[in-house]
Amino acid sequence: MSQWKGQSKGSVLGYRIFVFCIQRLGIRTAYLLLVFVAFYYFLTAWNSNRSLYFYLRHRLKYPLLSTIVGFYRSYFTFGKILIDKTAISAGLRSKFSYEFDGIEILKSALEKKNGGILLSAHIGNFEIASYFLEDINIENQINLVISDREHQAIKSYLSKVARKSAIKFIVIQEDLSHVFAINEALTNNELIVFTGDRYLEGSKTLSADLLGKNTEFPAGPFLIASRLKVPVVFVYVMKEPKLHYHLYAREVEVKHRDAQALLHQYCQSLSYMIKKHPLQWFNFYDFWKDYSEENQR
Image (cartoon, rainbow, N blue to C red; front, side):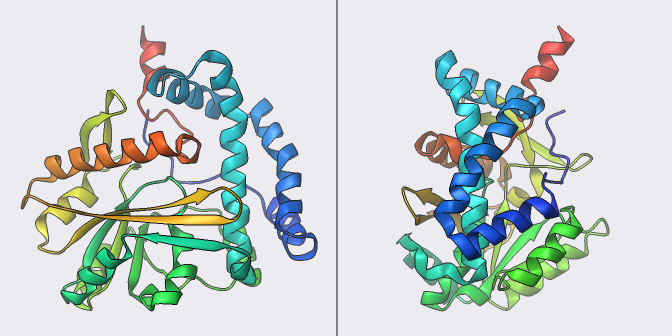
């Protein structure tokens, strides 16, 4: 199955070690430790490696050797972004630089006084944007819609060492009460962020082509964004060389109640960003059902 299980890997001990390195020895020392952690995952994460193989080899057409090297580089890049997020939230914001590309689009959306929908993906790390958006005074107007299945022990530990993000969270609920929270936030002229590239088992989906093969996406973000008469913006926050981040924002023309057309535009936008930053798309599972289909043959 290609749907995401809703929970990420990691342990409290691992986070403790990296937080110690970041605070006492510096960010680049934590990167050095990550060399060994990424190699461990390279050797042991068989399911993730299999997913990365189909992604890099079949979707992006990497040569075989580049595909195998890409396993390690993907884990290493993912780890660096987690370290950066922890460092920034722990008070080391000044160590990083940030570039806004399209920030005027977000400001314009808020000036219309009816809120807006931001569609992102599990590429780069949008959540760290809040620590930089403080500079332009819109960070308290952003709500991230999430599935709350992360490891509670890790979340509890990080809350003790990190400064709380100004981004607010709307947790998806089985009783659909999160829909009311979304409407309330829009009424208050706030921005709602959805990640449109993962769905949970049992949820409604739409299908579209991404990187040359049809696959499924969560229907909710695209149905909501196409039905509400508010600005819709594609947003990504990507890691650049050294300690630099780049925010991209692009407004979308939305046909009313045409969720499929919006999904098509989203896939085009996401494909462009994936090809620009191929090692920063972090869906380490059978996204296109490649090996599920292979096992059925």
